[in-house]
Amino acid sequence: MSRLGPKAFEQCAGFLRINHGDNPLDASTVSPEAYPVVERILAATQQA
Image 1 (cartoon, rainbow, N blue to C red):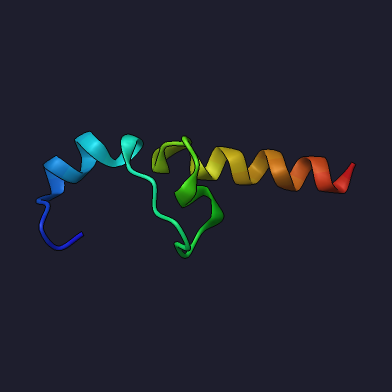
Image 2 (cartoon, rainbow, N blue to C red):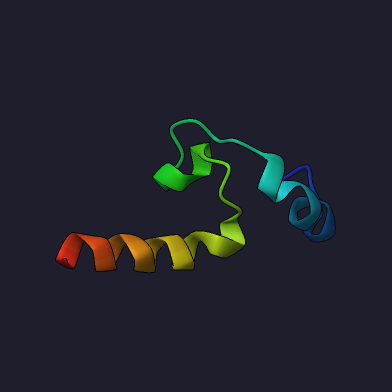
C-alpha cells in the first residue's frame, strides 16, 4: 500500500480486507503472517 509506511502496514495488515486481491486470504480475517500456515493446512487436508 503506497500510502502506508512499512510499520503502519505491519500494525494494520491484520485488520484490512482486500476484495479481489491476489490471494483469496486477502479478504479473510487471517493475518498475512499466517498465510503460510493456512496454506500448509489446506495442502494437508486436500491430500488426505
